[in-house]
Image (cartoon, rainbow, N blue to C red; front, side):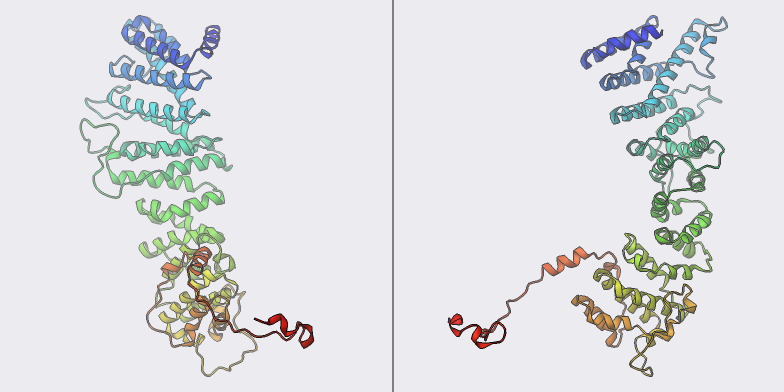
Length: 525
């Protein structure tokens, strides 16, 4: 057999694409026409192992037509498949022996297609995936497993499991292939059964050890999980495989069961050690794509509080999820505001999540029941940080601080303290203190905003001049300023129209102030 394959492979390399397609079409017709030509299947399968991309693509299309037809004609063995060596035993009829043999050829085809999910050619990968999913659909209509009862619903779970395992590779990025598979995840049955096998694949790769999972594998798992779009409400009826009869206990048709599977797979994934970049990716979609679809969102408390304690950008991103748990699920976080206060450092003005952070900070500081020392500490810390902030950030920070004072009139002494001395030799505020209760902000003032009245950018000066007048009760809308960039400020300045300024001619009396340096003749008009 090996010698035959070697000769066959050498001959295949020398054939052009058109002749290969014609040959495959001929062999396909021969196999479907007569069982006596069954061995021709070997020739078709050998093309799947060709090194020529065109030959492989043609072979995949031929195998698709061949085995779809055989499945529909019920010419593959149904039930627990005997070993190929046992297929020649006398206990089986000739009909059964043929079906057992052909079922093994079908399994060989599936195994080869799964291998092609790792191919270097994206075309081969995509066609192999689409063919495998077509087999899933056809197997669903014509099951290869014996039905437990008449008209019972059978999903080809084993085949889908092999596909998902092939997608979640350990050493190769599957992003492009996963984006193609996302189309199939729109089907409610495919989505449910995919979620049930992801944890099995994670356990298989983990192998019971406590070592960190391969980073590429974790990225592939995240890519598959993030591609799942959960239904919000309503009856689930979008199935890849049509049901003959709706069963009351069929889990993929129940939104509650879908949410449970969704919750299990995400919790199983998040218990593993993630890289910083993957941590950020999870937190970016957590509040919109994960928490709303969990049957018990409070199970994410440990993950979010741990992320919030990490610090830096990860803590900023964890705010979204914590906001939902605090406001919708009554989460109690004793040191929440203390941690939020500690996140205010110069770097917060330069991270790409700045807009999201200040939007959430504005929400968390909007309550009028917050203690005055806490609000004063936030206002003072932001004022101090504003001394080194870029103009586009100042355009947002100054109204942000003023809004805090408007909501909490008890903080007005920060900008207007008549009894205080005009010249302060020192500022009692302790910038290095991480506890807002010990920062002594109420004993200080927002002199930094007054200093910004001498800023080089005129718009910042106008914004800072607000504190020199009585503050209005109407809050400023900072939502449009959260994502303001330096480019936008520059473009705004460039669009301004400047009028010509009249200049007065004044005669020069000398280069260095001496009359005889330059004579008046040089300035005659």
